[in-house]
Image (cartoon, rainbow, N blue to C red):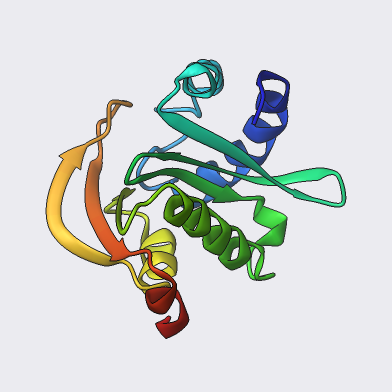
Length: 158
């Protein structure tokens, strides 16, 4: 991902976030923080410990991902691609990148109230640790930690 990709990434991220997280971030009270998210992406692109990626299909940005060491930091696919298999393919590529960096066990955080994402990750072998933290974005909803092995054998079992 480059700084020039950020507007396209936001264009993919915003609609999915609004749909999936309506109960977590009600838009009338907590609208999608477009400028804050764009600033965060730009800072993460510049951070040497973070690898940020765009998911592209036929020269169109259809998703995004970021990793930081063992953390699967961000992930999303355009709402119109949900159910197409694009998310599973992109997820596998991100895990491959983590393996390439020597990661054997990865972790991520997902909003407790995001049942769609939780089901997606659970189908792909992620398991909740029960550890909980809170988002820095108001209203500071709860996040649940998930972990999984990232070796090739674990990927084949899923």
